[in-house]
Picture 1: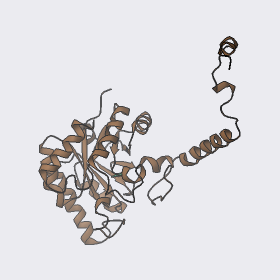
Picture 2: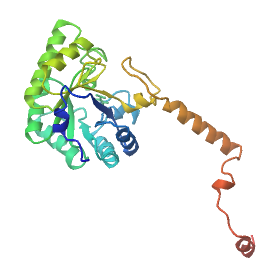
Picture 3: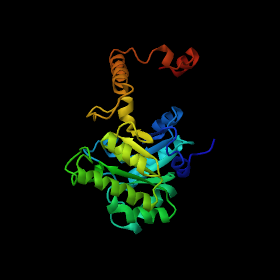
Picture 4: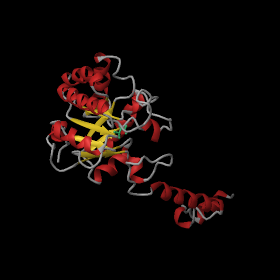
Length: 276
Ligand code: KIV
């Protein structure tokens, strides 16, 4: 089976739900793909879950490309989407095309994600015209969290619900192949999904979207800081890792590790000849 393309994802509108997940390295990509994930987003959430920053703003293009290349080495079938970091596209179409192109040329991605609605539609259109598939992202867009008044649900009042409708239409017009809806009321997400011709992929947007996306660390229970209400953890990897590393620590201190099975032998003859 070959790699899924942006056109394949686009064609899934209204069909079997799309499964998307973030990935940041070889291992998370390999495991996610083995589990059936169809779209891997090298999310700028790496700034927080991998690099330990407070928000997504500090991550650079160079850092994103390192993570993208690692994901590309781990996944053969999933569509790999590089998340354009803060200030890699907002400054204008030229820089946006150059940086989006780097995700394809140097990062092993097949598409990019751009946050924002009407205000970035021109830029999205330019990137699409350059032959680079774009995944849109509206609702709570973390790169603009401070302008949006914090990390809060979007589209609850009439003005902001109308703005989301306009955003979705502008992005469809610009040529996106799918649209992430983040932290949007479920009924509004349903209506947006019915209205746009491309698949919607929800995160905190209820069950009626064409697909779902979550952060890898949230799904496997590896993120100790904070769990948003819309996340469901399907494992407790942090506890399992802690248990294993604690056991290792204790066994080293008690000289129980390494044991005979983990040690290499040498012949008596050699030892005697050494005269140590
Ligand atoms: O960076 C990210 O993790 C995202 C989400 C949509 C999952 O943008």
